[in-house]
Length: 305
Image 1 (cartoon, rainbow, N blue to C red):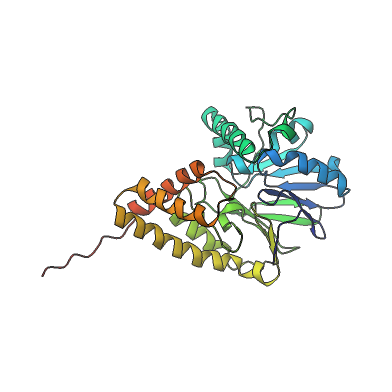
Image 2 (cartoon, rainbow, N blue to C red):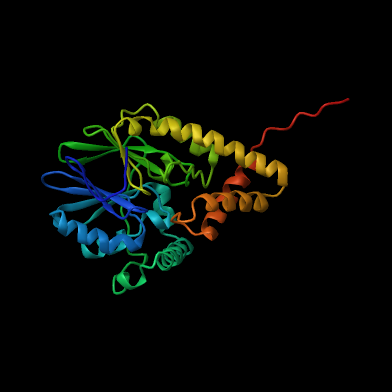
């Protein structure tokens, strides 16, 4: 079952934000952690929901970055400046990226572009949402545990969507937070964004497939519960194989990365015109994926007649 409405998921876990971009609050008696950072324009909704749901903001003491893309770190700068004692965790590669002026400029530019596209500029005016070089934190890696009172957040390194991607799993409530590294449950399909390295994206899915999952907490388009949550990673594995074949076919037919990417993106937006990312951003993503696929194609057999 796919649920896209913010609210309480189960004991100790909330979904906050909007349908197309959300964050999760893992709540215990004495402290709470936000998992993932969403797109910056969801901040007014998150703050309103914290008040409406009776969540104690002063107990939010930890924040986990699952990867450093602009649409997954958006609310963090505001919250860190509002709560300087906030402990932030991310992969070593995420911190490396977030220290680069070029990456910071890209985050701010893309955030502004999507905020304008979604008609959220006015409600975000006056909020200090921009990334600058004043946010840092601790590094986590494969096998690390972050404690939240009597719960623990297990860390898995799951590169492929990005070089800095990690996933989190909370065994006490059987909740998996794979970010985009687990696939995006958009409408009735699964988007498989192996942006930086599609092969690593597929290998990372294999790492997650045997976890006991009752709540699959995606960063875009809500969360999944019940039987579908338990099967979701396996379904993403199958969808990734299918989409890899489509990219291979498009590249082999056109013999050009950008032409193949354009064809694939055009087909996608004919079916799903309201997808959260703009065509321009998605064209760049598909270009990266097709370029990787092209470099890793198996040599074609030649036959002598």
